Image 1 (cartoon, one colour):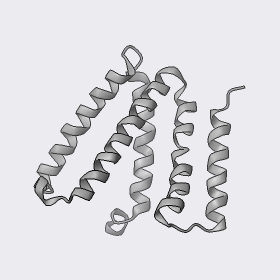
Image 2 (image 1 turned 120 degrees about the horizontal axis):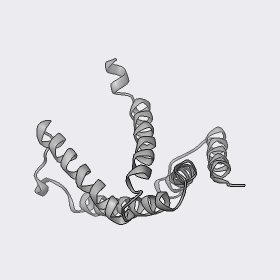
Image 3 (image 1 turned 90 degrees about the vertical axis):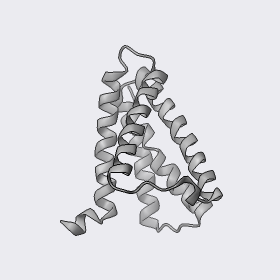
Image 4 (image 1 turned 135 degrees about the vertical axis):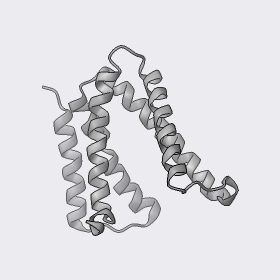
Length: 145
């Protein structure tokens, strides 16, 4: 069991499961509320829970121990996350969860392309075929006849 907890695959699948629950819970939760305000409430919950985890596990770090470059990229990541959440909740408010979530998962395709272009990552032909299948599948699931 210990080796499973150290596996990136385990945590990625757990993330996918929680992301699925996020879509379902959010779709029900935003029924009678503005999507931006719903995102605000969600963010408060995340801050409280994560703060408790950091303090409870002794992982809190002094802010002065973090480099300027790290701050810059974490702030940019936070801005991108916030924009993503606002857009996601707005999409859920307007559309079906079963169609919104697959299009949101096109982020997998975008990450692969950006990883190659900006991070110098290498992908094999089977990887590119998988990316094309993910893109095709997301579009097909989101398609409404």
